[in-house]
Length: 262
Image (cartoon, rainbow, N blue to C red; front, side, top):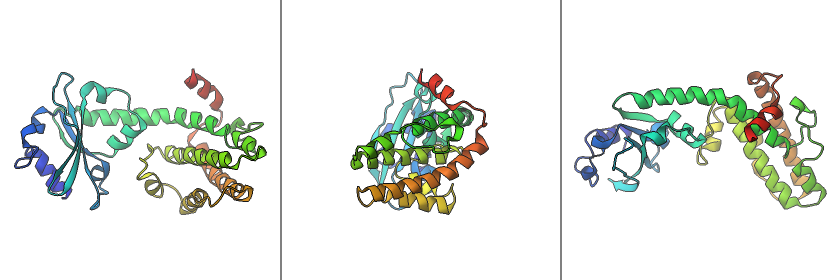
């Protein structure tokens, strides 16, 4: 089922299907396609993810999955106050890439624009906090932006010869670097299914290949972990330049982190 057919189904209140009795369009203030259909990256395995926004006092609550013509429809109903609250990264990713089918008063379209503006304004803070948290795990040997630690968790794990712990810490380091690779390009992080795929479109192929190599840890040996650390350092060298392009250099990252933590 293509996007046009789905839009038609929604606009006709799913006439002739098992969902017709719900009269979705009558209850909704806004209806949007999220997921791969909303982004325009659908394939034959894609579910149809539909978010329905309703009034706070509405009793309508359609949730879960339904199959229509061999296509899985996954519904989520949200009250107006829920949609107007602060958005998580997952919500930003979903709604910044959605396709609006219906928006009776144009409020949802405006809300997306406002949230996009807020998200970009908060990215400095998000980057700062992530960098400080990263410095506890990853050694900034050159003391870039005053982030060098005397002893990181990774260093301690290696000294104790806890190689499984060291490998796990490197996994966390990699995830934080992936977050930063999205944020320096002013994008919310993609969900787990699209995390690497979408990142490939944002960063140089050389950095993407380094990232893939760093994920392919073959065994828990010091040699393997040392090689992985070298790959992560190369990725960080790229990130430093990108961060310096977007973050004022005189920004006190630790001060931002402490204020956020409190």
